[in-house]
Length: 571
Image (tube, rainbow, N blue to C red; front, side, top):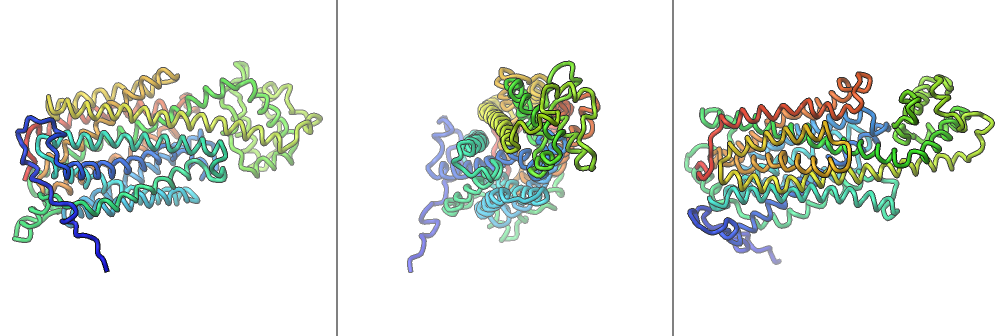
């Protein structure tokens, strides 16, 4: 029987990472073919990881709305979307710590193999979620793999690259990962278009198809087995066997005063970036979905109002038709939220349907309870003698088509927002990499943290039309996503080899336990504080803006950490 060739005969050990230190060559010419093999494979592992993360960011609100059978504009959607994000971050933190320790104890490459299986497998299973609890559990399990993947990929690249190329290679890894996010946006957009063209079964929603596609990165594990462990890790394990200090020990992170200080401050710095990314920035996607839903309503107002008036009037006049509507689980998302006219006191199709739905649930009669309703419905099918003018199926069909148009618009603009964020992030990470190699880590973090606060405030407070989306969203991505690239460069430079994977994971992931309150807090702010009842017309704007001062904390923290520019990795 034939056996597969041994790994050492297929992929030789990498050359000494410090062998070309002091070289005047550009960083990419300092890399051997094996360096490029490692860099590309780790970059793909993290890029596909980011793809699966972004599929979640784009699909969480539609998924929650469908599973709860409520309108996507219902404040409870933001609340549960925040819970889902927080649970994924907790899973991310837990997996990062567990697999970070595994990376130091059992090998970086072996750990990378299992984390890919985890995040890809559970992303695919999320598409089959039948209710919100299942959705939340699957996001937690996906987070386990996501957290472990970052630590091992960053550590492998940091330990395998020549000293002078290290920061550029790590910046490359993080910058290219933006294409995973962009790919997720196009996947979501493409699936929506295919369903619209009836090339995919419409019985399954876009969000379900998107998560199922997320299982494809599992194919990467077939290439990971040809990677070899970094020489630095092999050396550390050999020293451990000869009686040296243990690898992957959480306890040892806190016995050395210098390491303890760096771990705690690194954790707090990561917390700021994670809250900014997951707790603030990604809600800009939901904000844009709302902005362009309103623009779509405005563009089609006269036609859609006519449909809604006839539909709602028929519901009031014909209880049998109303029962048929409620059985079909039609929500207020099928109706416009714009007021029909200034004299209507804010009354609109969505508001009337919500009241009718509430009355139905409470076994109350569906009647014209307010004078404003009569005025809004004047000339419609509100009178019983006109109730039979339209066929029931035809009326429901017209309203359903109206809803499909809205969904297509918000899907396109949600995807475009994601693309714009990540195009900005791609250039931001490369800019961070260049700047940090010239002026140092601490000044660069300071510049980008200030920029993150300013641009994020601009997005949430000012963005209300197309040109502002095209300007503010990429600038926010440029500033905020670059912080993730900064962590990839900076954290491996703070810790010794025997504890590097554990330390990087601890910083990046314990910070996530604290940061997990961010998305939940955001959802709570929209549902209970910045509500329409309290006078806030768009709760999501004020919730996002209120969290932006968190970036000031990051500016304070970075100046208590060491400058590592141009220094070799600690042994």
